Length: 325
Image 1 (cartoon, rainbow, N blue to C red):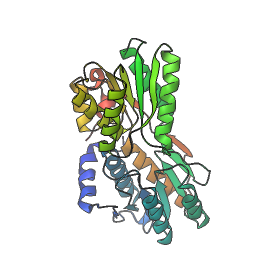
Image 2 (cartoon, rainbow, N blue to C red):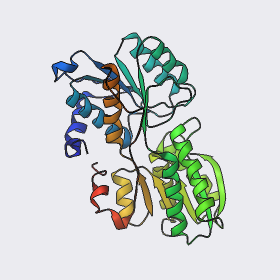
Image 3 (cartoon, helix red, strand yellow):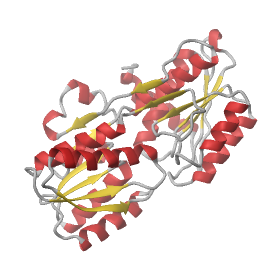
Image 4 (cartoon, rainbow, N blue to C red):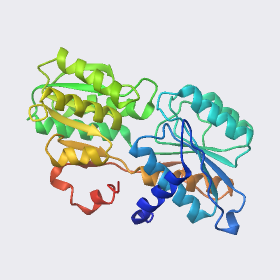
């Protein structure tokens, strides 16, 4: 699993480079075969545990392949304009390739097109992009992840009840696919379950997600189950359920994980989490970009996997390998 035992060390290295509104981190070439190759890696944000794991994987790939990794992205996951500016800046700097997790599946199309027109190949990771200018797509099967979350929630509810979907934000292709998968899964696995609300967006921060979640719980007091489609939305909903004293009465499944969410899973406050492999995503994204630059064979599509984590399977090896926080 790409030496994930070194994840903590790599993450510590990444933190030392520092980040403010955006972060730009370089890595010394370690292999003469890749000397001079510069790969820009642009995440959706830089604060969530998820992106720190992506960064660790990207840095490790840079170390293994002997290329320079330039990491830079917006701090918040709703700053589309800053992400566009970051892409434009790397185009101006003439990097050899760009690995991008687009904040918006439409607004990043033109910047990616410009990069490719100027001879800079682009690998898309994490979240889809409209258009076809990119060379490779490295991501989770988010639709299937959403379906698996629906299946677990349906099982926890015994196939009956009223559930709420907390969406992330408009324009995010990855979470949009999870939300579509969840709704399709409920229809398939538990047609008797009523979708009470499915049009509420958490927004890019935990605080906004908390406020939206509180409003949902207050307005729809009869909610029996909830699905939240990303890390910040899951954190916000968890906080709202705790505040309302409903962690034991409302079944809750979320997407993504961090140390706090895993602790809540252990405590029975969360019934399940869909856990991706962001470390592998960062690694495979850089690996594909380097292969493209060197005109070597590469995969046009890489599924980095999804694992449904519950209190019962926390000690399974395939789960523990993903939970190196």
